[in-house]
Amino acid sequence: MKRECRKLAFILISVFLTLLLQVSADDKIVLPVRDDANPCQAAFQASYDRVWNVLVQILSDYQFEVKTKDKAAGRLETGVVVFSRSPHLSKLNTGVKAYSIPPKSFLHKWLDGRMRIRVQMTRISTDSTRVGVEIEIQGFETSVFDDSTVSGDWKECRSNGKFEFELLNDVATHLRKKPTLPSEEGNIPAIVARPVLSKATERENEDLANLLLQSIPEGAEIYLNEKLVGMTPSRLSLAAGEYKVLFRKENYKEFSRTLTILKRSELTISSELEPLPQPQ
Image (cartoon, rainbow, N blue to C red; front, side):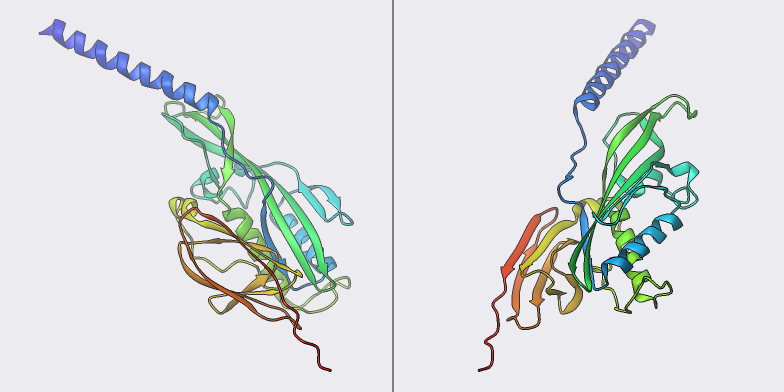
């Protein structure tokens, strides 16, 4: 009886070690998928200078140190901030998983995270500005049997889009306020180019579809199910379902389309708007 128990225990240990080696090998070759060419974007009905000032203020409020600040090129880049050392990020209940989809790993856990933000601004017109946000995010991975923060590795993670969405919504909220700085001329209400979504679970975030909306000329108002959500060009993250999209721009005919969006799909709607006949 004892010999049979030892034999069974040996078989179970062998199977466990085989699975562990397979998973470890997989972790070495499977890299997170990133789409660096298409950061999250939004268009705002506000001047370039005002959007710039608001972004700099928000990054300061988040306690991110701006390392690169090139206003002429519309480029902002922060230094790396560690979640556990940030008053803003350390409050997240799920840590790095709140803003990313970490690579799958066996018998490992995520103890911390760190992040860098890149922002690219483009002037659409005198009173319209497009903002693109991209983040680099990593998680500190260690064994589930190790409670220390010494042993482990930083692993690249894929953004789930939630941080970019929150940042763009914060920009829209600030732009709705009355300007207080001399350089913030004009009190034009800002509209973030994404519909306000309820807080989703990580799985729901993974199921969102990406919809790119663009027009010729740019700067057309975007209506999604009869609600104004921004200006072209913009990128939206949407749940699966049916949507009616409408582009509206002064002196041009309206463009509309009804579509059904599936989970995790990538869609683009482009339209060359037709000018209205000019009165004789």
